[in-house]
Each structure stands twice: as C-alpha cells, then as structure tokens.
Length: 64
Image 1 (cartoon, rainbow, N blue to C red):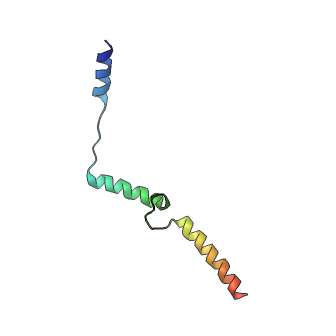
Image 2 (cartoon, rainbow, N blue to C red):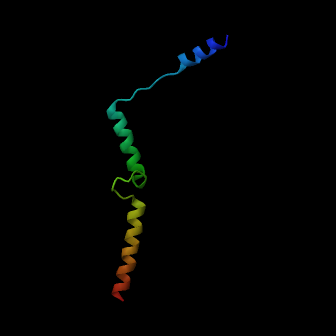
C-alpha cells in the first residue's frame, strides 16, 4: 500500500533540536563570516581595507 511507504519515510526523518545557545552561536558565526550581509554595524575586512586605500590616496593629494 502506498500509505505504508509514506509512513516509513516519516519514521526515518530525524529532528535535530538545537539549544538556544547553539542557535546563537551559529548566528554569531554567520555574522562574523559576512558582517555586511547582516547589517550589524561592524565592517568586513574588505570594506576597511578599501577605506584605508581611499584615505591614503586623499593624504597623498593633501601632501602635494
């Protein structure tokens, strides 16, 4: 019967429950990996490096 097959499929599904602490840790890892995506007011290394380049260029213009 087709219903028996579906029942077996449902029995094989395992639910993995995470504690609130594990959920928070996972979210923190995601934010650290890509802060720009989550708009958390911290800059990624790429953005900081780009700003440093722009500041150096401006300083060179001012020193001339």
